[in-house]
Structures are given as C-alpha cells and as structure tokens.
Length: 210
Image (cartoon, rainbow, N blue to C red; front, side, top):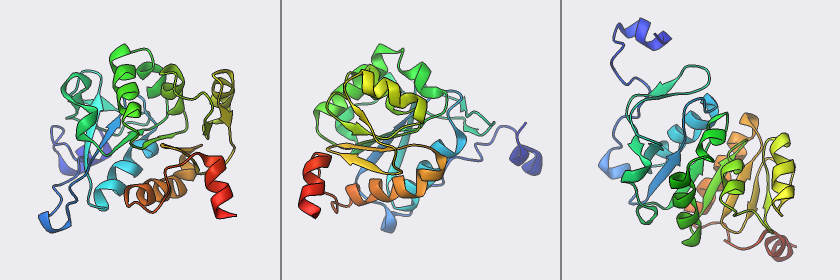
C-alpha cells in the first residue's frame, strides 16, 4: 500500500492520475507517453504532470493497458494498451527511462508504433534509458542523442552520436540524460510543441544560431 493510500484509506483510488483539464485551459493536441513496469518514477511523473499543467491531454500507454508501477512504488491504475492507440492521434511521443525501456524494446508492437510515429516527422522525446527503444527501432543512425551514459555506447554502435548534455535536439528527437535534466528536457519539449524550435538537424540548427 502506498503512502497516499495509507493517508486516504483508499487503496483502490487512482491517487496519482491527473484530474481533468478545465476546458478553457485545454489544448487540442494530445501527447502519448509509452512506458512499462519499473520506469523511473520521476522520469514518468514529471513529464506526465508538466505536460498536463501546460494544457495537453496525456494518454499513458503500456503493453496491455491497466495498472503499472514505477521503480519506487508510484504508478497508475488505468493506462491504454498499445493495440488501442494510433500515432496519428498524437502530437508528441514521450519515452521515460528506468528499467521500462528494456522491456519495451523487446515488443514488436511497441517498436512498430514508434517507427510509425517517427515516419510522421512529429517530435519524439526520450530521457535516460528511453533512447534504448529508439535504438531497437533502428532510428538513431546519423542522429545526435543524449541518454544515460551506459546507453551512449548502444547509440554509438547503432550509428548515432552520444552527446553528454541535458537537452539535445536533433530533428524530431528531443533527448536528455537523467532525472536532474528533466527541467531542461521539458523546456525543450514544450518549446517544440509551441513551435518555438526549428525541427532541423542539430548541426544545421547550430549553424543557424551562430
């Protein structure tokens, strides 16, 4: 039983699920977060709440839907199954880290969704171990990405470039390294959603800013 369950005395309530966004604050775009058991709690809940705060409706997607628990015990009781969602319905895909990506990358339905989403050109954000899913989906060749340091070797072996920075934006990919990067990472994500960041390769973006 979680701390919140002990406080409220209700083990069946979904205490961490966001309440509905008021109509006057709700944006038309929807965001999809794909995750699984043992995701890093902060790397899931920080973007989940921050994107909702900004007015975006967020759908949480897991392999089979229903309940999931993060690495340190937080979680949600209701998520959508990957079989029930379509890339066309979302403006951005977010992949948190922790141990969840190691499971997600084994599932062909997840990888198929990620590949189809990437083909639309819409932004994909991933942090910490999240880029492991991009590696398994064969999407990192020629790209510059941030990640947890140990994942950097996988990125390099897959033809990408590991960049040890809090926020790395390269084309449609927005990546970060660790929980301490979340404030910078979400800044980049929100700037992208608001159309304030050019969706171009990182090298050309740096040239344009020079």
